[in-house]
Length: 467
Image 1 (cartoon, rainbow, N blue to C red):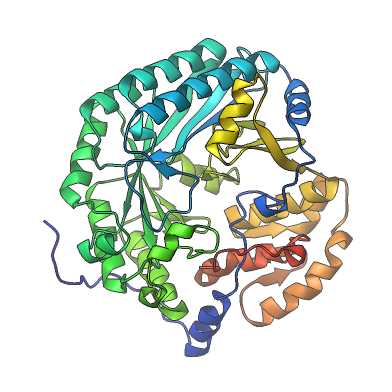
Image 2: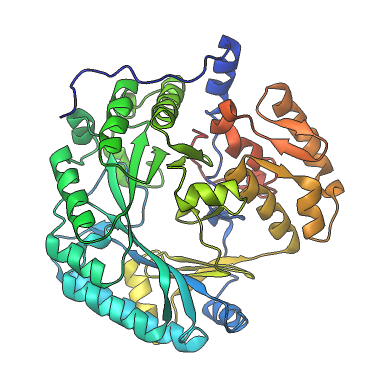
């Protein structure tokens, strides 16, 4: 049983007061999370369903793809949520949505993906666990009918432990799921009530036990910091509780309070949110606690055991980043299905309608639901590579990246000048053409990446704070 007192967890290496002040000031900047480049606020309606179909048809025939399925429903509303989802009080809307999702599969597969090898599948939301066992079986059966799912494919699902039944776990097991991401956020009942997510640890333990008992043994735990009423003590205790579950990976996300974009976040009293300095202390506490337990920091906000594929990919320079976060997925294309789902292909990004009624009407009319996206330029690809390597490795060799894109590092002359200020602040080290973000400045890697974002100054979108 967890102690109710605040544990004396390991602390971060001590840094000079001016460095701590600098880091605190830096994280107040609002920058993208860089799960893509260009980022979603810069998508436009120039990418249509016909554009998307053309991109699909141009994929090399034997090249494997990854699939993402978005389930935009939950049983209750978590006030911190930033996802495309809605609350349903009956199952009928969910069933109707699954029927449309099956139709989307029937439309998209013959368009150039039929029986194509699949190396990764991800069920996200919302809450995929809201699906009935029959609908999970139906969706999985159609996927395998339309695609050649490889025997070693990673098939992952996001899990809401609350109300997770054995029947649902068994259905996902039949679907071939071999990795589960379990949402925990924070274990303090006060914090849980403040974000409208009541989840006793006993519920989480039972869910994990059911998953492992069914053979789904690759386990991720998702935590958050920066939540209302949350303290350093809370995040330390939450890490301790998470580690008791023995996950291979832990993801720790900073809460982004953007009620102007997600109206339900207005239910959170902003006066209860930690300030910038407290958020940084929480971030440091999580890092210190998880590394003391033997987890290796992965990129900005993930942690993994040394023998986990994510840690091995980082060690070999093969770590990647997509809309689901850090990944080992090396597929050439990620095909997203469902409301708001985004596809990533060599030519660019394509996104489905974000409103479920719009998505439904387009699919039922016999077409795809693509409404926006972004066609990549050569400059986008070049800068996207720099940003991804920074986000994954905390370092990049500009000369090497430029050469791989048939360019020279002179392309980044303006960015080199902009980086000098960050270098003086200690946020980045510059040695020749190599940039490195020091480990104690990991929290600011998005600020370094943002230097290479040529679209950022044009944006009126509100982004999350850097930490």
